Amino acid sequence: MSGTADLMERADAFFAQGRYNDALRLYCEAEDGPKARIGMGKALRKLNLLERARKVLERDPDDAEAIYELGQVMFDKKELGLAIESFKKAIELDLNMSKAYQSLAVAYRKRRELDLAFESINRAIEIDGNDPDLHFELGELHFVKNEKEQAIAALERALSLKADHHQVMSELAYMYELDEKLDLAADYWRRAYDILPMTRYRKNSFFCRKAVERGDEPPIDATDLYRQAKKFRKAGKDEKALASIDMAIESDPSHTEAYILRAQMKYGEGDYAAAVADSVKAIEYDGRCQQAHQIAGECYRKLSNARLAKKYLGRAMELLPTDDRPHYAMALMSVGKDFDRALEHIDAAIDRFPRSANYYLNRGMIWEQKDELDRARQDYETALSLDPRLENAKKRLHGLGKGTAKPIQEELLEGYR
Image: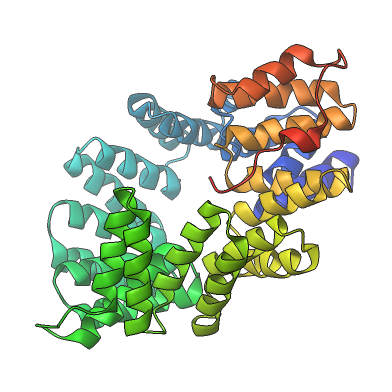
C-alpha cells in the first residue's frame, strides 16, 4: 500500500470513529486530489469550520461527491438556495445518488416547499428503498402535512429496516404522545432510551410512564412537585425550588429526575458533596443515567478526587459516546500534568461539539504550552470567530509568542455549557 493510500485509509477510519481532528490532519498530509479534498471538506464541516470547508470543496466542481458535500456545507450555513443548487448539480453528475435526493428533500421541507420535497424523497426511495433514513424523512414530511397515519406508517417501515433506530422510536413516541396514546408513547421512549441514554429520552420515558401510572384524575404527586420546582428555579426562587424537590422526593423516593435537578442546583451553589450524593442516588435507581454520572464526575473533579472523577466520567463516556462534556472535564484534569492527554480529550470534545469557542480557546492554550504557536493562533482565531466577545482569546492572541500569557491553569474555563 502506498503512503498516500495508507494515510487515506487511516484518515477514513478516524472519520468513521468521529475523530475529526485526527482525520483532518491525515487528509491534509495526503497528496492533493479529489478524495483527500472531499475528506478534508467533510472533516472541516464536522468541526463547524464551514468557510474553510466551502473553499476546499469548491475546487472540484465536476465531482458529484464534492458538490454534494458542498451542498451540506451550504445547508449548515443556512443558505438553503445555494444548498439546493448544489444538491441538484450533484444529481446531474450522478443520477443515482439517493442521499442527494434525500438532502434535497430536507432542504425543500425547511423552505416548506412540500410538493418538491415529496418528489425528491420518493425518488430517493425508488433508488434505495431499503435505507431506513429515507423512510424516516418521508415520515417527517407526512407529519409536517399533519398526515399522522401516513407518518406513523413510514416510521414503522423505517423501524422494520433498522430495529435499533432510536431517532425513529423517539419520533413515534412523540406522535403517539400527541395523540394521548401514552402506553405506546412510554414504550417507544423507553426503547429509545435503552438504545441510547440521552437526557431527552430518559426524561420523556420517565414522565410518560408516570403519567400512565397516575391515571386520568390524579392527586398532586411527586411529578407535579418536581415541575413546580422547575418553575420556581426558572423564576430565581431557589429556596422554594429546593423545598418542592424535597417534598417530591419524600412523596416518591425513586424520583430520579428530582434527584438530578437537586444535584444540578447544589452543583451551581458549589455544594459538590451534596450534588454527588444526589447524583449517586439517581444512579442507584437508574444505572444508565448518563447525566448523573457526568455530574458526579464533575463534582469529584471539583473535590480533587481524581480517581472517582475518572470513574464516573469514564462511565458517562461509555453510556453516551457523543457527549463532549466528559472529555472536556478530563482535559481539565490533565492540564498541568499531561498536556498530550489533555490535547487528546480536548480534541475529542471539539469533535463532538465544534461550536464551543471555549474549547478552541483551551486547545489554543494547550498548543501554546507545547510551543506550537501557529496551531495556537489558529485556535484563538477560531474561538473569536465563534464568539467575538471572548476576551481571553483576544488577550492570548495579542500576547502570543511575547511571553505575556498567564499560566494555563489559571485561565481554563470550567463548568457546563
